[in-house]
Length: 278
Image (cartoon, rainbow, N blue to C red; front, top):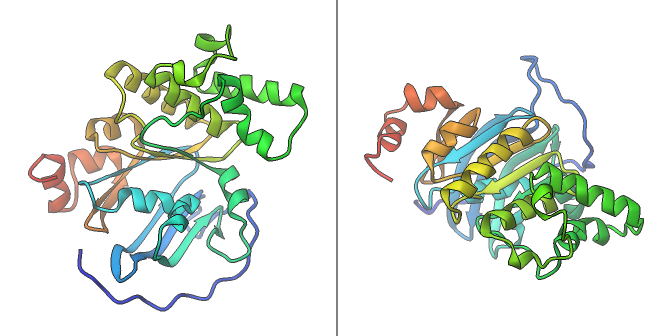
């Protein structure tokens, strides 16, 4: 998209990350919010003036053609873009009403609350048990009974425990691709986040493994807020409550998934979901 000048940064108040219920004038409770968000890489503007709200215990899908800003926008919610050279942002990203880009926010604490699952399974070259226990151990937790309890609970939440319970010392890299991705989900769940971000989590998987991940997402939304980037529009239709269509860094349309796919308001949305471009 076009190169644009940066807007001056808005002054931000220091806040701490803590879970709390935030209700708004319309009575709606939101877990995540983006307010007038712009993203720049140097002078290039990758995201332009996006505002949207995400309710708790739901699945929200981000769709759009390659390079439209879906993954960049997703990574704002746990500050993964901070590692990219020349990254800059205007606007606000709120978690439970609190600005996660405030100078007082500790990123390591944020990422305990907002977990991330990547496109390709990325288990550590360790045992199944050690993969899931990793996040607890780096927090300094040494109670082995507690760690074992959390590992088993997380593997069960990821619907993997029944398949691996007889050999938790098995190398994680020996698992199938679908099992590795569910292991990565279990690893994210072990530290008890309230939000789970997924960046095309099934794009490298076969249809059977994809179906298992989709079934898992359906169950996890009962306890977690899930935001997923997907190129698979059928997948978005199957698993999400709301869908955001992005194009060239802009939010074109956002609303109930069924409406987006059957009666979109924007012609550009209609053209994309019917395969006329993208």
